Length: 457
Image (cartoon, rainbow, N blue to C red; front, side, top):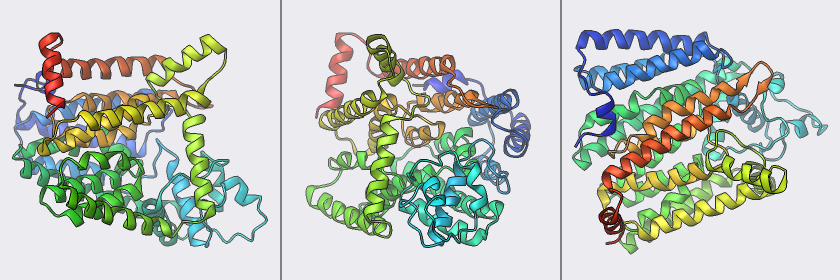
């Protein structure tokens, strides 16, 4: 049975046409990397639309896997010397690394507090302070990321481009290893290895990870590696990998219960006995009162203040405006997070054991979390794309296209939420998701019985 993506791109294209698409993609990626600001909407979105169209066509092309792999590596290498223009988060990465190099816990002070602390600062990157997008806010980045920030700042010696290059080397290495483990896991599952290019060639993955240096590249790498080692019954290595996934982003904590149905209870306890002590050790270098208070402040801001490219949250917020006359994010954010926790717990309780579908199983708690979140940056979709490689679902691929257009909110004066684009994005994404679910579980009495059977063993 064809997937919806295969029906959307139902033609095969010649090798010559494929090479023209690769050449056009190279030009488009170079434009995005070196000649496009995030406020250059027309150039940005035309270039992105082209690389997405080329991506879909190349997936159906006649060229070999080796050529597609070489193309995916080349597209990433094009960003090697670029200073990210679409995201300014990397300045905060360098700032945190500079604090660590100066012997200061990055969780101890916000940038504003540090400059007003009266300390004798020996930081090499003080001049990037005006470029930070979160000067009054505490850092939110876990230990694995902070370690890379520190190395980048130390090697960069005050040069932003050099520090950026160091981080990009880490991004490239992580991406190449992710491709290795994705392919290896596809082989373990007996699946077509060509499916790896759903991730390897995905424009959002290339631009946001290698290009904009968002550290989801570690989360994808270590989570997929953990799945691979688990499938090979290498419990300790699986636990080690999951520890690093958690230390790079806390979200993988939501995945832990779903492993219980794949591992016998004794091995599961060994698995957890590896994860929690190692995670504690990874956090230990930063673990003090400043770290705890900083993480609490970051979590509070995340759930009670910030909003970006959300879906259900905006509907809830509009109801709040109608009922109370003000933005209810202070209560809506935490309550939606609680709702996500409950739904994920229910998904775990009723999920049917099937070891070969563990990546697909992990796709759903992440989807629930993102659907109810008040902040959905485009790069948050990337782990969903990685998990979808092992499924017939293609709505994450659609989302990887649609979410990028949230950049339309950036302008010369800052940011203004493009609510119409948000609405179109989620109508498209949820529409495709419902369509694909409907194909697997036809609506009606028989469909409900099939759905019930799939969740109960």
